[in-house]
Amino acid sequence: MEAQVLEGLKQINLFAAGIDIGSGENYLAVPAHAVKEGEPTVRCFGVSSPEHDAAVEWLRGCRITTVAMEATGIYWITLYDKIEAAGMKVVLVDPHSVKAMPGRKSDVLDCQWLQQLHTYGLLRGAFRPDGATRRLRTLTRQRGELVAASASHQEQMQKALIEMNVQLHRVVSDIDGETGLRIIEAIVAGERDPQVLVKLRDPRIRKSTVAEMEAALQGHYREELVFVLAQNLESWQFYRRQLEACDQRILRTLESFPLAAPKPVSPVPPKPVAVDSKPGKTYVLKNKSIGRGKNAPTVDLVGVLQRICGVNLMAVTGLNVLSVLMLLGEIGVDMSRWRSAKAFCSWLGLCPATKISGGKVLSRRSRRVVNRAAILLRVVAVAVGRSDTWLGRFHRRKKAHLGAPKAVTATARKLACIVYHMLKYQDAFVPINEAAYEAKAKAQRLERLRREAKQMGLQLVDLEKAA
Image (cartoon, rainbow, N blue to C red):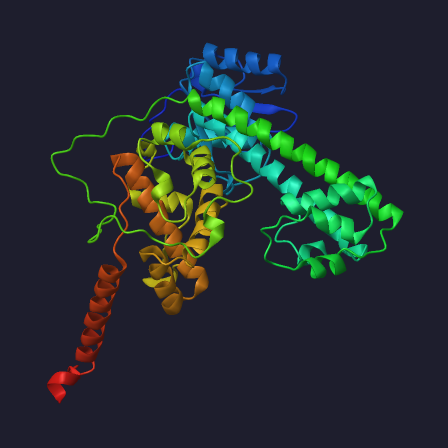
């Protein structure tokens, strides 16, 4: 496909290249004026490290300054890093935004199409955090995999116990707690007497009595099921040790992060995150899941996270050390990558989209995006909705008005705006007083009712005045 000059468009990137990424080979396209006459403008390279080095050298020889490539699986990562280290700007493109290529489709045509679009500046790059954040993200995602693997083996332990008719989960809060683990280890070691096993219970247990626990521990203890229980216990313990090692590596990675930039000085102070008419009030969270859970980090990360962020994100309702750690692993601390809080929420897919055709609004549903940070904020929003805070009241008010799914999205968006504002302006989070929030919400609702009544030719009258 020969490069065609698009009339009415200005060529912005004169030395732009396009790369079609594949699992076995990569096709690179450069403009015709970047190579000697008679030389091909498209070349194919393999995926090994020497082939990547050869591709980078060819781009250098063609005086390429910027490169566009599609985000195809994970195959683009190594070549992206090589080109970026060579000093060339790399634009990572969402495949959905360039898939509508006219004509036949092939790898050669794909890379030429990317090169042509990038020449005219028609491609928008995807977000890719800095190197330190990428290292942290790799570790936080690995930590999530370890938590999921250990939870799977915990479920298998409970399944084996139930098949043996040992109802341990009914008499203790968690089978992976201190009492549960002591009893399981004793069963694996060969103990079968319920009266002996019940002596391993913690005296602080209030969920069941001694008699109830003895009855729950009377099972048939089949040999094959005990074997399955032992293997899953060993696997669970292995993953917990792996989790501790991962937390230690995360701590070392966080300590290598640069400290937060000083608070920016602006002649016009930014809008505060929240205003509290009664400072110093203690808020009680009804849901335990937004506090410190059993999957919390095994090392103290509070101090290092505050030094990196410059503010205490754990003070935000619903956010704890683990959620802040996962959030920073996905978005980093540099909010200058987004021009505003609205752009940040749009990237997360937490704001209404606009589909208008012929002057008619077709849909305002939020975009369907796969974003781990957005998923985390949605999970936190559900927990926040059960808390006795102003954010919890906001969630419940939106739920009554719009329904549960939209209320979760609205609450997650508000949390995203708070996080953006705190990281960008280095302002502390101050909760809003519930009474002041309810009074403001009531006034807004009353004003809306008056406006609707006026449109219908009616008038609202207070009960005291009417009497």
